[in-house]
Image (cartoon, rainbow, N blue to C red; front, side, top):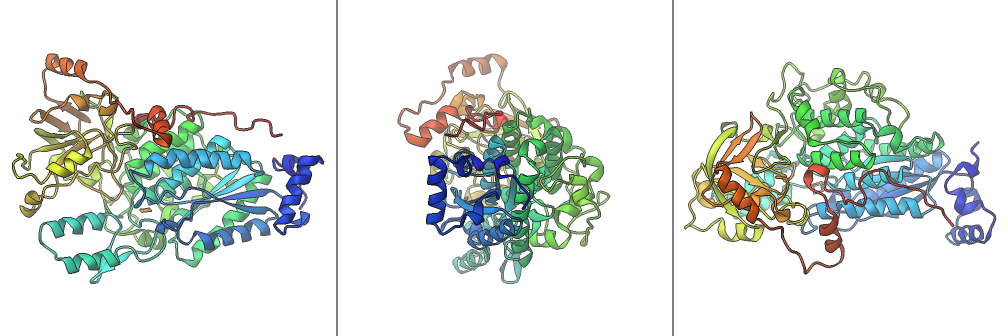
Length: 572
Ligand code: FES
């Protein structure tokens, strides 16, 4: 190809004509490559988050080969670089604690190796923001390749959705409405193919956000993982990465206030996971943008919920794909978007979605017939959350939009688990369950404990929702009247630490407020007595994490990673 190797970043490794070059070239030859394979060619890192314990990425070994095929077709040289897999179901206390680790790993892999551009392979919840954050900080041309959703589950002819139906059937089991045998059937049927969760959980939300931001090729986020279309998309991503390098199209060209606006519109129309707020803030701030929760609150009233996908809707991601997928949804929202935003293929978002059609109007609703006009997200403020909290009105009991009730406070998750079934504690339909000690520092990592479990005795009475408040997060597949991300968290001295069992708490979703109904004098006194948590015993990564993680309203990034850095130190 007509491309001057000296213009490539990787030329610093392979084209200096010194002893270092000798060493680098000889070692690629050791692996069986000819100079013809790599000299003068854009070197594309394929950051692969495959592992034996990540079912959402179990097809990535095959897809890597398909991406490599595309890279070679376009005249590049592919290098597969493994990165930490972040398997949502398995990693304790939460993959969120390791999102920043993946972001660091992605950035350092791209910085330290002879790489000109990248394909980022992610999908399972935190892998998408982690990879994007790292690539944005390094600012090398990068294409995000989404894992794709798994096909829908099935039990006794009923379609099952990841997460949402796990919670639902577990509650029915605890209420005595289904037996052990039924539960085993659901367990076997709920996840049947490779791919990420196929509800509109964090995975589907974040891969859609990556596409709306402009980091994925048009249509990529909606393709189910096992389809042939997905393999072809992988090969296209390989070609696109080489093209992005030769055009010198970098994340800093793509990530702007306009693309972040488009991503927020997308999240709201999808009824996406509340996690998107934290991740989008962290992603945007890596590019020096000042994105905050207010962006979502300002847009939420304008954007109806159009994607009829569980947990807020009725269908699943393969239905969404067949209905036209994300490009069709975005085309129907064109007037709300900023269509001139550049994307990784060199076209604008508006060009990428032009002409996309909805094929199933019940799945991707028209704005005259939305799934819901209730805002998908609402930011709350008040004396319990001076720096904000979030609720997902579209996934809660509408009767609880305005609620006053007595708090039942748990200091940490262990206490919640131990006491929630205690028959001696008073708990009614009006009770406000409160969990503290579950934020970025306290959790640590804000585990997805925000859908606090209801005691069996209430489930047996047919009660399925209570007002719940925490400084934790909630899975995108969860639902209920759950106030999340209370900021600042109790472990750093936030006011949740001053709340006591029996205090009256008022939630007003319409007004956007959350308050303890305690006199000002009494509240001041209690706040003055609150002390931040002490975590003397921490070691290793946990110690680094607790010392440097930010609060939810700042995206939970490390203080030493947020903002635009200096990506290219001298290479010797
Ligand atoms: Fe991987 Fe849900 S467990 S996306």
